[in-house]
Amino acid sequence: MSLKISLYGITRDIVGTSVIELPAPAPATVGELLAEMRRQYPALAQLRSCAVAVNNEYAEESQALHTVDEIALIPPVAGG
Image (tube, rainbow, N blue to C red; front, top):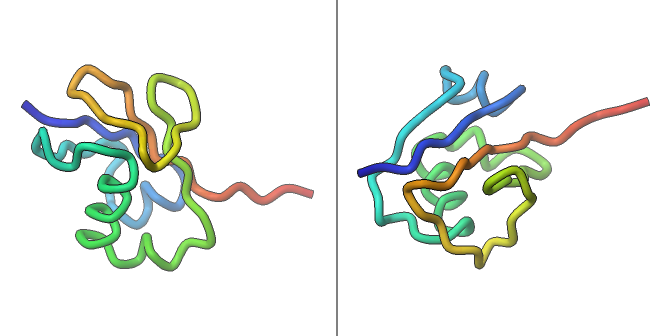
């Protein structure tokens, strides 16, 4: 079983694909997911901010993740 993560914008460019899968149960929280993503893709750590959405809602770093969750990495957005 695995966690499926959708990537958008610069996060997709850094990783090189729009969807990746990581083995479950680790990482088990949003914070652990971000740490693992930054470990595997060091350029992600250079982003000013990066949010995670779980089941279409922004998630706190302490939120638990499950294999059935829809997970998305949301890059910083510039506007004018």
